[in-house]
Length: 414
Ligand SMILES: *Cc1c(COP(=O)(O)O)cnc(C)c1O
Image (cartoon, rainbow, N blue to C red; front, side, top):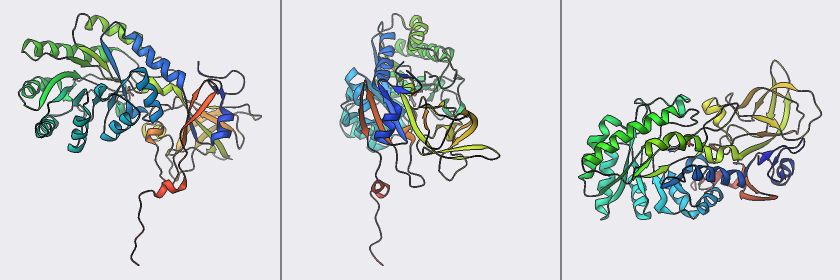
């Protein structure tokens, strides 16, 4: 374990968290380099028997230094905006290993991605296909495309992060996809190269993925028979992590379960893990500002929903622990932030021994943590630190107050 408790004090690799909080202040995101790299390698090794490419889902955590680490390992990237493409390029990522997902790609984003030379557009609708064709024809190019099929399987995860059912906005109904493939193959600005799906996030069972894959493979075979061979097949991301007591499948279990279905196929296998690569590699450190006993016992901390939105947005449960020994009796606390919203609760009824000033760690916050941070209530966004052994690198500075009005203009006239 790289996030561990060698004594009463929580450490990330060889850096005790109280020293990190002292040096960089709180709230503070801390990531373990070793945890990220070993999660990526576990995925890569699990699929070593296949011609494959990991395309890390940037939206889980897009900090430049993290993208840089992954690019150095040879990772590709799954992006959902032109902004994410710019980040990947800035961090040294290879555009030829980038796939572009998302239901609302603008013309400017399509132009940007074509100019960069990405691996594939993951197309989510007939209208998007037409737009990409038009942009490509205009610039004298052929856009490599994959259709994101919606296989209509229930990922059996939280409804907010389930994407593979007919009623979700994502992907193209698998029944309609076949016709659209034929149309795509006839368009002058389109090169049909692949098929993809992504059925949801925080998956704790493999069956939905197996179903999605077999439905997709049936279509791949029909297309091939009709003279539309595909070069790649992209199984999306979605493997869960441990927040509480889940036992999500490992990449090795995933590869073992999907292996028989994929054996003997010529398609290159792509995958788009996000959370599974970075989620458990991160902590959010926060300090108790006040204890407020009463009808409920509140611990008011210096982190808020503006720093970590998942509890407010998804009613998500995140493990919260004291990071250092505390001389106090445990009580049931609601851990709340300073923001003027009742939704600003990071955890309810947690048994913790607290005093004002106690340092807390919120676990498994490496994914969908900082990326969702905002400046609501004029709160500067927190700093981020990457730990590597006994070294701690500041990879993002805490925002100064001036950042709160960057790009704003006062009226010049009276
Ligand atoms: C969000 C997303 C992912 C990553 O999901 P995780 O659950 O973080 O692995 C992959 N692909 C697409 C298309 C996504 O929208």
